[in-house]
Length: 102
Image (cartoon, rainbow, N blue to C red; front, side):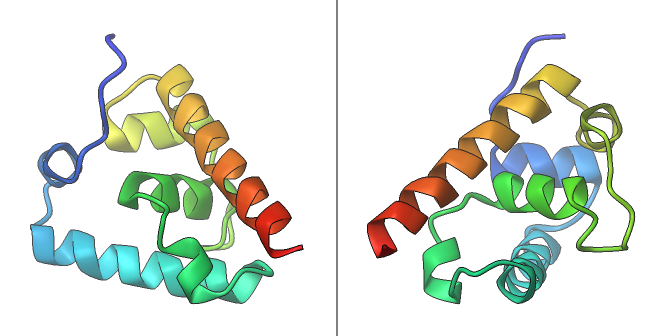
């Protein structure tokens, strides 16, 4: 499987949801991460919707169950390697934000 860019359009098609629902999920994911991390809401805004979804799913913030990269990849229709790559990119963004605030 080719590693695809997880754009909002791609996510809505793969997850079979509307763009409105995706925006709502992004907002909910921001709230969840805000409650479980030391970052403020504004700090988390640079994260893309797919990055937020992957972080929330990976660490189990949404339903209390941590998901594997493979399980998240199955939900999104991409490889576990692609999920891992996006996950690492999101963590690096958060690390840069943390250093910037320190």
